[in-house]
Length: 173
Image (cartoon, rainbow, N blue to C red; front, side, top):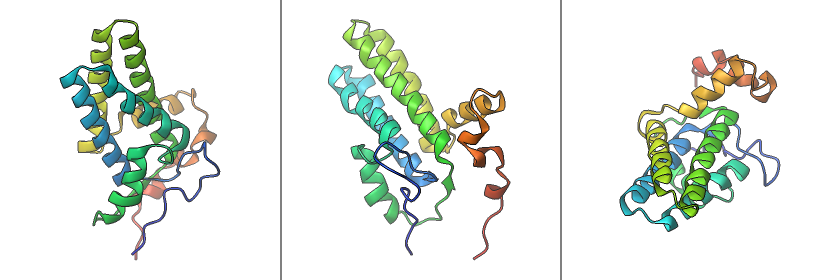
């Protein structure tokens, strides 16, 4: 059985997959947890480099320029034997953006001599990524939904997010 490609509706390098395989999203989040915990343990600036790069790359290109994103979507997820769920891409991209803000902020704080700020930002990222990886709860997606509800994010950004009824009905096969 072949899984649908997560890049099926992408149009160019600087785009994001829509829909997103939830299994891939959780595995990428697990990678972010590992890198974040590593940073909190070793407390060295160089650990922030691949972590920050990964988030920025995923925001800009989805898994295309993200080494961990590419490994997950091309090699790991296709080998996971379970029914895969696909979710809208825009909330996941927003969540990656929040991760990018946290990691860039931690990198800048470190460069400016404020490592404690880096530790706090990465600790917060660790909590959010752990929720996604281990519980399937995307905090960034919840924030995205609230911003849509309040009219901050226009409805046309994610039409499927406005009407989840299609995702609640399982296809019969």
